[in-house]
Amino acid sequence: MFSRATRTTQVVPAASTDYRLISGWTDNKATRIGYRYGTTAWGWLHIQPHNVTNTMVKKTTQFPRSRTVSGTTITYVTPANEFTCWLTVCWITRTMDVQVVVNSSPRLSDGYPKGVISAYCVGANVCPSWVVKVAG
Image (tube, rainbow, N blue to C red; front, top):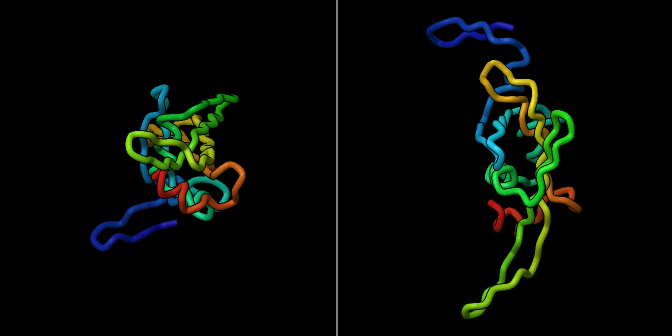
C-alpha cells in the first residue's frame, strides 16, 4: 500500500500501523519491552477495553512481584494497593493484581521485540477506577 505525504512519497507496508512503536523501555531484568499500537488481539488496541493505562503497563514490567518466562513469553504480575493512613500508620484497604503478558521475540527492525500482548486486572474484565488511580 502506498501513502502520500504532503511533500514526499513514502512506501509504507500495509501492516506497519499494527507494529508502530508507541513506547519502549527495559524491564527489571534489562529486557527490552516494546509497546506497539497492535490490533484487537494484542498491543495497545487490545488493552484499551481493560481500562489499563500505559503507566500501569510500564510499572508492572519494571517493578513486578513475579516474573515468569515461558519460551518467548514473559508474564509479569504486581499488586495495585490502595492504602488508608491515619497519623503515622497506613494499611492496605484494597488490593488487585495487574498482569502484563509480553512477547520478547523476535526483534523487529526498530530493535524492539513484538512486545506487550495483553494487560489486565486479575479477576476483573475491566480494571476498577481505584486501581487506575493508585497504579497509574
